Image (cartoon, rainbow, N blue to C red):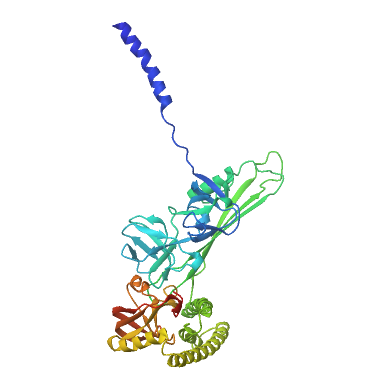
Amino acid sequence: MKLALLLIVLVLPVFSVHALAQAPAAAPSKAYTGTVTADNVYIRCGPSASSAYPFGKLALGDILEVIDEGFGWATVRTNGPAFRNIYGYVLANDKVVLSPDGQTLTVNAETDVRAPNIGADGNADASFKAIGKVPVGSMLQVVATMNGEREKVYKIAVPANCVGYVNLNFVRRSSAGEAAKMAQAVTAPATKAPNASGANSKTIAVIEEKTTQASEIIPATDTTAEKIITEQTKQETVVTETVVGSGSVDLPKAAVKVEEIVIVAPQPVVKTPQMIASEKRRQTFKDLEVIWITVKTEPLASSEVGVLKDRYMILMNDSECEADIKNVVETRVKQLIVQIEAQQRIRQLKEMRGMLDADTEQVRVLKFALEARSDYTVVGILNASSIYDGKRLPLLYRLVDPAVGQTVAYVSTKNPAQLAIMLGTLVGIRGEKRYDEALRVSVIEPTAIEILTTRKRDAAINKQ
């Protein structure tokens, strides 16, 4: 019996050691500290240069917290000094509560942080990709309020728990010193004073260290005027080493005097309503120039030159419009007037040709449309609009006269997919037709739409 117990005691450690040897090792972590190797490197909302838009730029030497790699991309945590001037968007809804002063948000339900699309100048409607979440109870500093055509968002400093993607061609593993600098910046960014011991009593050494930190704070507002405040803070640490003796051996060692001077931030500068209005005019002008390029490529007979001229006229008639913008706008208006006159002559020729050639399909469609007009508010060929495309201006569809290509009215809808399948067809619409002062066009809100006849693809008035 004693011999059996002795054997069990001797064998158990062997099995224990063998079991430990067979235990699977933990998978190695892919996380490391990385350094950016070029200037103006994009950080994107996804691992793709074609389908993931950028939401910030990194500079040469920026230090990053890389948490994963794959398919040529580094997954990066938005943590550290490199992301000091990179922002995120939080959708303005019932998940967040804006403070009365418009400067902070209280999160009362977990909400997404969206990446601002800097390729679209940070447009709120074009910034839809989530890069992280903010938990319940968080307090966020509001930088600005961004109003899009469809959505309103709050601009915030990007939280440290979000992620972005950087091309691995522009990231290398950091040195030990760079990694230590990153850890120090994240955990304890304060400047430490040097050790006073060991100073040379025969020389005078002066060490000067200055640090400057600038940050932009733009409080949001839900009222008419949008205030943008820039605050700059500086912290200067001066370390001066002086000699306290004449250099003899019995004198005490040199002492180090450390003085910290904190320069109080200047008073915030608030943008005036005039400055805000000027920025809005410049953005409107930029959008119109993009539309101008698109309209120029379309067939003149059916292009929306009249509507575009009216949009330019709003800027031209603005007494506060800047001279450089007004000069270009006046030129565009003159060009569009010439095109409108040419368009009218083309339409007159088409009307004459239609009367002479009564057997053409176009005239048959026109005859059918004329007969059907008594049953509908408007009748015409349904086409897309290059101006009211839902990007810069609201989404509307054009209803075009089948004979001459003239716009009969613009059609608004809450279900764009329903109208999309009717493009290029003759339709009859019942509903309320009114002139929209803001859009400067006649708009009909349909209560009923019926397809009257199919229009051939090669006879479509405008591009689909």
